[in-house]
Length: 185
Image 1: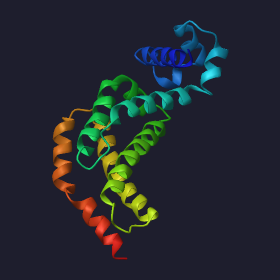
Image 2: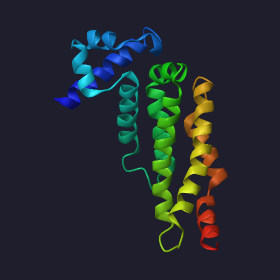
Image 3: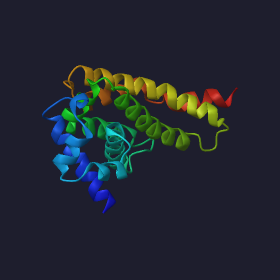
């Protein structure tokens, strides 16, 4: 029942975001739209931004399922683009609100999780420190998220597949080279 209520609250928030900006939406608005009382909202979430983050994490988990290997990272990243694109009104509204760092935090977490799995896979048999693996993942995370934030800022006009194809050309083999460089330290 808890997941059902959370999904209903998410649907209400997304519905309301089609009508007004995030900073104008109240918990009462969401509860009324959902047909529940405010206390039920607080049973599941501490505030609206907690609901926003939960919604992003849920979408991300589905998007990356089975796409976090060296051979599938491009598909995983494309799935991230597609989830963002499929939730364009939601993402654009949150991005343009005073709390856009929620979108950035979501994208950073999501991209780091994708990359760290790829790095762990590529480091098998290599003696690379955990902190070095995280450094490599953070470096690429910043580049990937930077591209995605520019794409969002430009109203998601560019084709995500084309962007990923270009990114693949640019970094093909670089993660392996980085791992090898850190084994020589």
